Image (cartoon, rainbow, N blue to C red; front, side, top):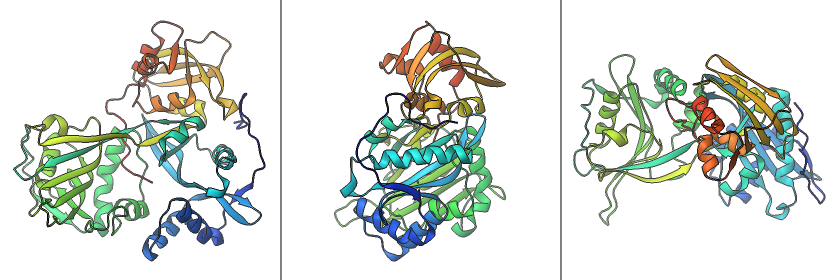
Length: 419
């Protein structure tokens, strides 16, 4: 796959040189990230970040021997409709304040595209600290999350009878082996989640301390059912304040195989003594809790935000690897100013059994930017919405609707693993 810039791509000014960051420069990388993100790492957090970087591919921008830009990539397997694909999960993306607007980020990403082509990763993904940056590099907001809060000062009213099975707390150290099958089932239902190994469970899902709120307690894991659980929740708690603010239950993750199992877990979380509020910072927009709540004044969506930003590094490989809900035969005119192989007109023939995607000189049925195609890829955005928003152009009536039907998924995509 060619990763040379497409027509219209250019840059000016002298650039640093780009190369892999060796293990003995990880200390420099952490110092650099601390400077850029205005953070001070205590010893434990520094050790945790070091462990993460050791498992990542690391690209650096160097001026002489000084690190002035950094990009790390987790080696992920991301769930997509019908399966999973290798994905570069970007993190620690940072440019020294002395080197902003000098093409450092562009250069790092161009190096990444080449690395993805070499290692066979058709996707790249990130959680954006500044959402305005990444659209121009071909990333689209492919999933969204809701923050949900429950007023638990009174019993939680639900329209679904909770599963009467037993609830039990389990040791977080042994939780990955118990919860792994449930998480894998959730990944099969919802695109957008990376696969987890024991390290990922321990470092990303169940760290002893919450990186963003040191007043929260250690992780707790509750499961429903005898033997193999039918649902689980990962949560932390915080005491109330002297001013009358009630204690908090923060839900980091909740997965259940049935609505009744979900109802049992939510009821438990809303009944924990000495708390009066449950906050789930990131839930899918189609979370059944929002329908099963008897009183939507008690269960409220307090925010909604883009979560996983996706880049189709190799559009052809990505489109031909996912499954399709309905047949479609459309010519797409895709604009990609960063990766030349993706730029141009291509005929997509999608069918429930698979699809093809080949260059063509035929007239376009639909024109759109590669970032908007990425937003549609997991099923979270429909091409028709893009047309109505003026972000895509339909040249053939019905083309967007046909692609809508082909891309549709039973569940909205969901990415609960922030990295």
